[in-house]
Length: 201
Image (cartoon, rainbow, N blue to C red; front, side, top):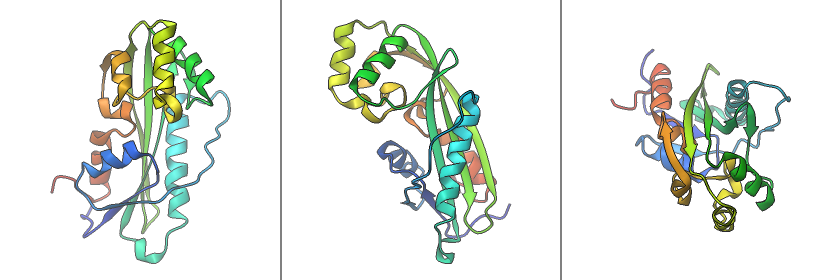
């Protein structure tokens, strides 16, 4: 595909973590919240959940754009934590965060992150996902409560942030670290290249 001239990225997310990661690509970008509905039917496979929600977020922004934004690629993303088939999203409150961390401690779970890229001119889209395995340290009740009191779990899938204090409760990972943070940069850069926006040129 022909390379996009002077193109920019529109990130369909208000996540500070995703904003920091996309800034690392050194491409011009702007933030446009999608306000998309994030409900999905019970029983969906994790990959379907993250890919559907990523595309739903990017499409919601696509429908808001004016012609002046046509030389852009919209990026939507969604992250979930999966433990033995059970999906853990963001905790509803501190009690829910304690519940999530209690079931995750001492075990290995998978983090799924979906990424959708939509061409603002044509509406063409690419949607993919990546999986990373994360092993948690065994934790006692006092350690879990202390981490929850830090406030960090509040808006994080699985109730932890690997890039913050949560690094202290993670034993090891297998796969893409940035996938766990919330945006697999290597995967995204490949998708942008397919759409004509080469990160390294």
